[in-house]
Length: 206
Image (cartoon, rainbow, N blue to C red; front, side, top):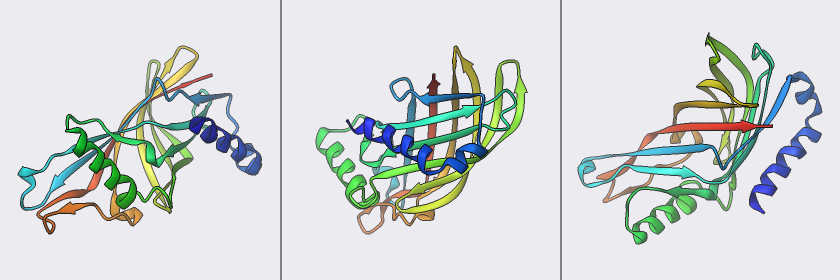
């Protein structure tokens, strides 16, 4: 039901923003297959007592999107919507710790009741290199997180995957750029660092 709502929002965008879509025509349009895709966030611990803390690996569980492209990627585009409350800790921690970390992430960090969705929409795609069936690209676009929209640039390796394609890569972002205060304990002696690393392996299919 939740994934259907995300997909419905993408369809609404196609109707509400026809001018945008007309300027971004592509030979092929695909949908992101969330079941075959992987999106990971890595948060790192800092502070005076960082040695007593733990880095965390967080999986994005619920997202939808679409990809458009042609042979030279001139009209390529990417749009994604993430349900913010779907982020889940996948570290080997106790169930009690897992619940507390996820509660803090939802209620205090992302404030998902106020900002339920995270959205990305590309504005252009630059071809950096091509070799065989692979393309290295830079995807430039607007990321909306925690109610703040900022431009970001993401490098990805694109390969054809049957009738679809696969995009892999990683990028970093600072929580403070989106007015997010990283959590801390012990008067800041153990705290999550401002910079996060995001890794993705996205599969898009007809």
